[in-house]
Length: 142
Image (tube, rainbow, N blue to C red; front, side, top):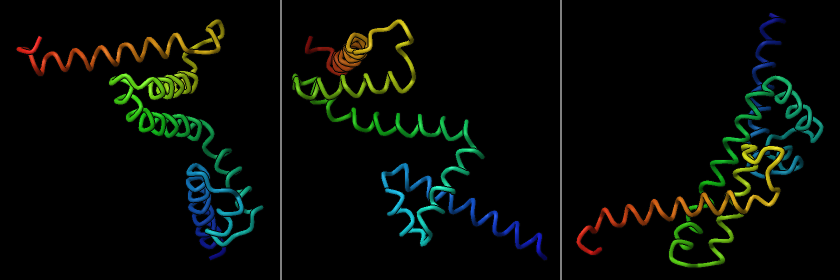
């Protein structure tokens, strides 16, 4: 019976740690997570530390994927505005593209730290793809 109780407790602790991690990734503070899960701040810290130890590689890959998903969503509006010539939107898009490239370590050790060249090339490719798609949609207009 004691073993069953320990197993159930371990499952509950893991579930709580997963919830804490999810809340942390969405921007909650330790204090907010503790209040939401009705536990102490030190319990939240222990849970987050334990989940890092239990799933370090998976956690890193998930973090990268989640951050990339956020970046992709944030890029959509500035990209469309940038295609229409909005320079502030282009600048925003380039900053996001730079952050995305850094997220995937695309620059390497010898690359320029600013990343503007790579981001600009990526933006140029995207603009070209849209222009090519627009030409295919309206062949008689060109």
